[in-house]
Length: 132
Image (cartoon, rainbow, N blue to C red; front, side, top):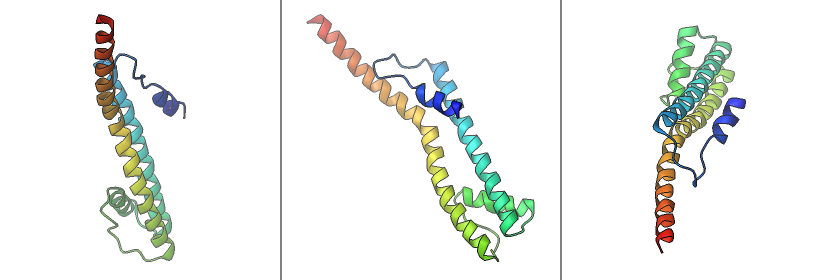
């Protein structure tokens, strides 16, 4: 949990100088690692659910979980009511995970673009006000 708080608190303010390229790449790597952990946890959760509810083998459970997590839909025909409910709930969860991962990966890039744009404008305003 401390990793998430540190990452969220580490964004610079609009009045600060934009982050150096090396630090920006480190930020991208940290966000990518968090996204990879979320994917691994979600895939493990899906595999366990398919193995438990539908009594699928590991490979078939992995295939179904990864297909739903990737947005493609299940491969195996679901036989049990519990398995069908799990697949529906896992599909809804997977849609939310997709949005969270997209936000995790895009946030540093969007922040950098907006920060540089705002910093350049505020930097130009400071130069023009000092010259007057």
